[in-house]
Length: 244
Picture 1 (cartoon, rainbow, N blue to C red):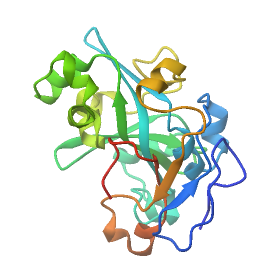
Picture 2: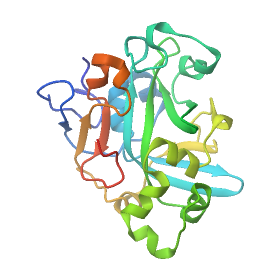
Picture 3: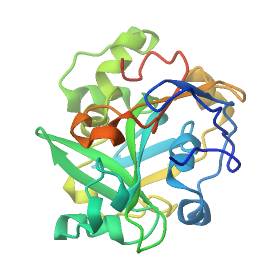
Picture 4: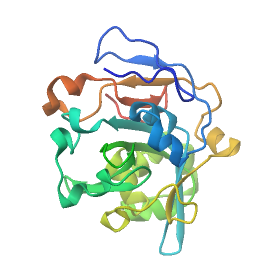
């Protein structure tokens, strides 16, 4: 099993066994780059993407959130990955098209957002599992069909109704098949990754040195032993991450 160690801003401490939660050293702000998405191992990217700002612009509205939870999917050798065994279908085209692209797909009537990693011949990706919502909260609430008021942003449980979980965050940011294949590393893209400011991170309760946890991915029990690999990463104590 590959560990996220020896590269990037986050380094994993060795856990007792696959499936156990282990700790990553700490958060260090990272500038998303094509080079890193192509060259850094994907489990490293899944830790490094924490604390980045995901920006969605649609129908004249700007919605943003800080990534607080993500999962790595490791291509042809990972039974939980759509490209396991070298599978190629029209739906998987983005996954085989190089780094930094939106690989969106529908599951259980919800859309999910993955960001492709590695070079064209390596179909790996990072699933964005949860955001701390920042801009456009009222718009997000309307898209999610939940009630909203000025006090709601002070309550983590209310924020969680917007962007806690991969399906919720896609609906809140209006992400679906229309964004398939978009370049999230293009600063002009209407769906993109950016560096978060100190103020944005502080609103999400994150600062340099905030601890990161890792553990098994969610909802991949059918992947057998691969389901136990600690390829999910999240900020320790963040109330918007999955309860698993």
